[in-house]
Image 1: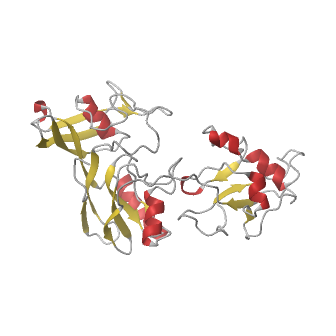
Image 2: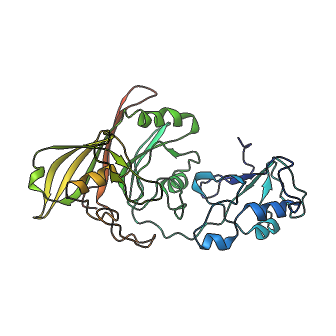
Image 3: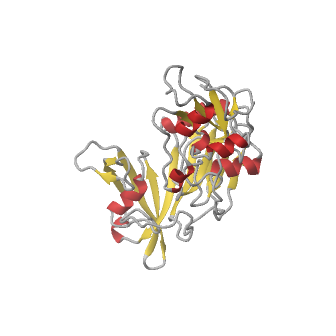
Amino acid sequence: MPPRSPLPLRHGLSAAWVRTPHAGTVPEHEATMRDWLLHRLPPRSREANGLHALAPGATAQLADGEQPSVDVDGFLSEGRFVWDDGTPVRADDAYRAHRFVFFHRDLREEPVVPGDLVVLHQDERIVVVDKPSFLSSIPRGSHVVQSVVVRARAELGMPELSPAHRLDRVTSGVLLLTTQRQWRAAYQGIFEDRTTRKTYRALAAYDMAREEPTVIRNHITKPTGQWQAAVVPDAPVNAETLVELESRVGNELAIYRLTPRTGRTHQLRLHLHGLGIPIVGDPLYPTVTVTDVDDFSTPLQLLASELAFVDPVDGSARHFTARRTLPL
C-alpha cells in the first residue's frame, strides 16, 4: 500500500501514483527518474488514440478511475510529479528503487451532464442521491468530473464520499453513498450479500401478454470486451427478475415495475429485450447504437426507483424513493 498522498484532492479526486520497481530490474538506459517515467508512462499521443495502458512492467494506482497518460517532460518542469514527502521529482534525479511518485493528470473538458444530482437523504453515515442519466457513478474513462462521486464531493463538501454500489451510467435513480471510509465496508456488504430490496421502473412497448406478472429466469454472461451481455441457453440460472405491468402510457407504451432478485450486468435491459419489449432509449438492446460520448439527447428510460434495506449499523429500516418519474 502507498503512503498517504502528499497532494491535496483535486476535483474531489485523490492523486494518482506510480511505484518504481526494485533495484536490479531497471535497464541501464533508465538511469534518471525522467528516463524511467518516459519509459513507464505512455506518451500523450497514445491517449489521443484511446490507449491508456501502462507500458509493460509498470505499477500504477490511478485514483477513482483516472488514466495515466501525461506529458512527462511538462510535468517534470512544472514540479507536478512529487515524492511521497511532497518534494518535486526532478528530471535529473537518479533512479530510486521502490519509491512512490504522486501526480494529478490533466483532464479533458467535459460537458456538464444535464439534470440535478438530487439529495434524497443525508446523515452522518450515508448520503442517498437521485442521479440523472448519463452521469457515471464513479470517475471512469472519459467521465471524471462528470460523475456522481466528484460532483457530490464538491457540492456537499465531503471529500470521502464513495458509492456503496453502482448504477450504469445511462441508468437514473437512487444511489447510496457513504460519507467516510469507516462506513464503506458495512454498507457495501449489504449489496454484496444481496440483502437490499431494489425496485426499478422501465418504459417500454405495451404488451398485453404482460398483464399478469412474469418471472424471467435464465443465465446471463457478459464476455470481456463486448458491449452486449447474452443469455446462455440451458446453463444454470444466475439471473432472475419479476416483471409487472404497472400503467399504460398512451396507446403504445407502458411502465413496467421490475424487481431483480439477482444483479447481473445489464440484467433488466436484457430481460425486457428477451420479452420483445426493449426499454425505450436503450443504446445496446436490441442493437448497438454508436453515439458520441457527450450526446445526452436520448436517455435510457430505466429508473432505479426504490431502495430498501436494514441499516447494517443501527438496525433501522431504510426506504428511499427517487423523485424522478418516467418518462424521463
